[in-house]
Amino acid sequence: MAAYRALYRKYRPLTFSDVVGQEHITTTLRHQVENGTFSHAYLFTGSRGTGKTTCAKILARAINCLNPQNGDPCGVCENCKGILNDAMPDVLEIDAASNNGVDYIRELRERIAFAPAEAKYRVYIIDEVHMLSASASNALLKTLEEPPEHAVFILATTEVNALLPTILSRCQRYDFHRIEPEVIAKRLKYVAENEKAQLSDDAAMTIAGIADGGMRDALSLLDLLIAASDQIDEETVNRVCGRASNEYLFTLAEEILNHNTAEALETVANLHTESVDMGRLCGELCEFWRTVTLVCSGIAPQKATATTAARAEKYKKFSEKCGVETAVHCLTVFNESYSAQSSGNRRSALEMAIIKLTNRNLDTSEDALLARIAAIERRLASGDFTVKAPKESDTAAAKTSEAPTAAEATETLPQTAKEPLSDELLKKAEIAADQSKAQAPQGEERPMPEWNDIVAAVFKTAPLMYGLVNGSTATTRGNFIIIHSPSGQLRSQMAKRDGMNYKGLLAAITAVMGREMIPIMEPEETVSKDDPLQGFVERLEQL
Image (cartoon, rainbow, N blue to C red; front, top):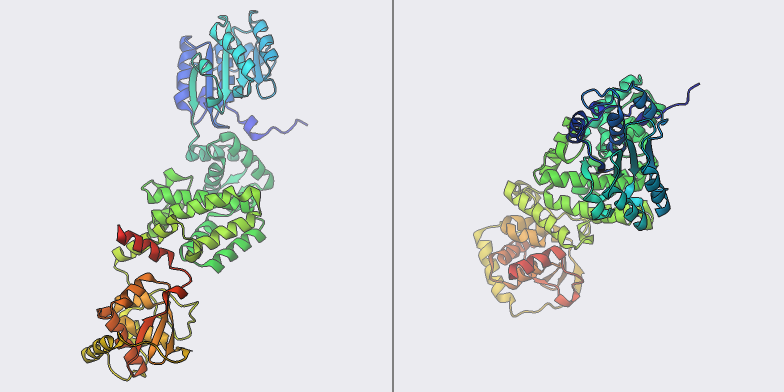
């Protein structure tokens, strides 16, 4: 029984025409072979799995082929068969990662002087040439400078910057590009069909995205998937690879965007239960927010990542709702979390990143503040000012920071109001404001349960003031209401006791309490911490 051959070996291209995604290189090499104008030294550079070694082997056969076909090796002559079976001593493939000493290169220099035994040219394919030691590189340099006419060198590397500039100057350089996801997916479909396996389009694009432009990586993953099942869909790919599906990524992103901390953490817990690797999930979230950032910046989703048309539309809609500032902030936080994965608990690092993104008060970075300001600007531009009204059951810690609609505010006004919210009441409030300047609070400080009703009423009497007092708490001392809030802007408005916002607050208090009471701010020294967003806004106003 013959040994099983891995798919990337079984389907390795045998001619330049079979190589996909590198037409800019294969076309040139075919013309050189056809015209007999090939060089004595080549340098193939690019990321892994893009066809460097494959093209080197094809070129070695093509220049030694006894009957080349339009620049391609025929594959049937004695020379082609000998090279394919590794039985041709004149074609030598060297792994510089394990043979990187100067003695090995010196031995090569001594052998290269002899004429080829069977082939037309001696071909030396040196893989991972950047791994050669400094002395070995210098020895190779001399050989490349004055090679015999029967010798051809093909150097391959993934790190071209590590090579000596003098070596680069003596080679024809060819840069292998990452293969487009659509091209990889098409090839995978072809291989799967030949292997009697069913591969869905979504699964093929998912594999192509994981391979990151490398055909060998894609075929190796397909090999693994075919061993698991002959019916391969996107769910199979995610399960075998231990990665989250795109739907989970969109769900997590929506929960982050809506600041749903508990729901986002529960989603992570569910993925952990399903054996999704937390480090891989963090990397996928980095890639997700990178894609969203690019789409927000005007790049088409299909250009930003390997995806289907349906999913590209989801990226587009989500990006319109998200905004580039929020996307950049999320990408930054997840990148920091990914960097910390190697030195701590992966799940904890990911959870801390999610908590930081869903709880605005925990992140006072400039990126976070800019994202919050951008969200406010988008809301103002849309003209959508409708928000939920505070409920009587809300506690100070759980109160919403959004304003009610006008209709909601009217319904929320307490039925115990002693006077209507009228011009006459506003005039009384103005008189009370003048009288309150010389007074000071007296008596014992007590809780004020009616404050929620007052805040709701403020929306009708002074809508702008509502945005400042919403989320605050209050206590009473005698005829005074002491407002507790870290907002510096609210403190500034309260200092203007003759302003309309202050008068509107007085009118709401009178309407709810049935008597005139004087609102003041708590002493500034008792405020524990200013709102970071408010501090940022105040600094902008000073510019």
